[in-house]
Image 1: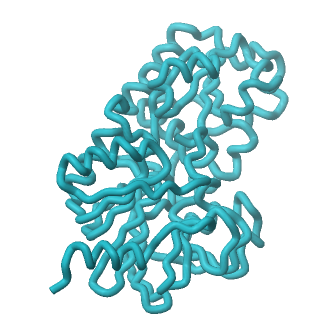
Image 2 (image 1 turned 90 degrees about the vertical axis):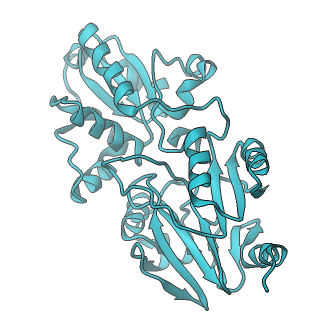
Amino acid sequence: MVTRAHKNTNAERLLFPRPEGLFCPDGVFYIDPVRPVERALITHGHADHARAGHKHVMATRQTLDIMEIRYGEGFCEQAQIAEFGVPVDVNGVGVTFHPAGHVLGSAQIALDFGGLRIVASGDYKRGTDPTCDDFVPVPCEVFITEATFGLPVFRHPPPQDEIAKLLASLSAQPDRAHLVGAYALGKAQRVIRLLRDAGYERPIYIHGAMRRLCDYYQSQGIDLGELEDATLPKGKTGDFAGEVIVGPPSAFGAKWAQRFAAPLISFASGWMQVRARTRQRGVELPLVISDHCDWAEITETLTELGPEQVWVTHGREEAVVRWCELNQIAAKPLNLVGYEDEAET
């Protein structure tokens, strides 16, 4: 008979933190390592999870494409495509990728070994997002959850309601250019698609740093409509009055932002629920749009999956661990470092 204590011990032997990242000694691979390693399994293309310099990389085709766009052809020595739902044997450990609902190509990674399944969810969100595959619940004994917004105070409103605020502002202030700060991978494309789904048909202007990724999304069948390059000369600043310009938040503090007509600074992020952060960034129109779960989605996911153990990483670990304890689920923080790029949330 396999006891729960024995399963716990086996789980901690199958996957555990090292300075490079989560390490599976039986499979001799890391998940989302933050330092160059021999073999890396990558959940998604954000820079805090997908680094260049690994010898062998396994990821979804879209994540591999995104890594090549961001890092160049030589981002690794050998790439291996992981198909959703198709098991692969990696040195005796069964590995299966499943949709995570975070950004295009994002995946949860399930490890099966000795009758035990661990699911490393990476970053994930629930609900439907037309720019990526929806999260798929994967039954498991151990679930590794992020806790970026792992406090009860975080409750994300429907993204359509936030986009409605942007459209209302455009209507009320047609003399001002509306600059929307959004992370170049995932968030920018989601904001653009939300605008399109809300009926906004005008050209949307994008910072040059977003062009290749937006083009790639379009190549994957995600319709973003007409996108114009906001970094090219467009005449007088007044030409941008009443237009939407999407760019990385870092660009808004530079001279680039001042070229637009009476710029109104907006920012799409889960952190925009925190008023101190909006003031700190000089955000006039905060849009609470996140590609991560809020508190309710985290706890509902854990309730739905019913794992024997929950391991919590990059975020507010203590609150999620405490919730698990109150609900008779064994839990612990992983205390991984090097994750949670604030701009992407």
